[in-house]
Length: 112
Length: 117
Image (cartoon, rainbow over all chains, first blue to last red; front, side, top):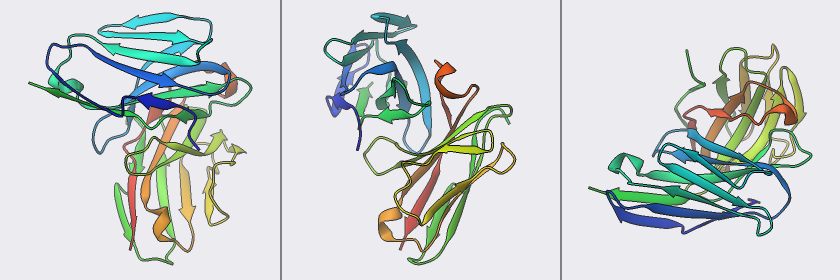
């Protein structure tokens, strides 16, 4: 079974708007990672946030982590049509190997 | 090549046949993972190798599934006596360092789409 749940399941926005996706998880983690998957392709790593970090930025991406609420959010600012993809959060359990547990993903559509 | 390579990209098999899926990880990557991704879902962990050692196979759904990485580089996922519920995309990923030492990303191949008729 999958660890996390993303919210919303699907998101449709216009170019230039911001997109926010949320992820909740169930157990203690070592880190949380966000991945993007274009249709028919593998996953591409976007950003990793450690359990002792609260916020991280990478280009147009901003990730927050609230371990007390067991939740994370991914914000994509000034979205582009090329951002259209599925986005997954994945958690690395404390005490495990690099065994990532993925949520079901948010399908983002950015319209020109 | 620079990335993780998987072959074949597509595989169609009849129920009951055996299939073998190949993964070429990034050169020098110690860790190798297999995931199964059903349509519209996130990847689900199948098994993990550290070099040639299979350290975690807790995600393999049945004893029909077998994975190996005999020389610590290329890996093969074999499914025997395939069933329709085995239809999915099988993703391979590799990372540079083993175990918890990785606050390292995993690098994914484009997967093999398996369809069982």
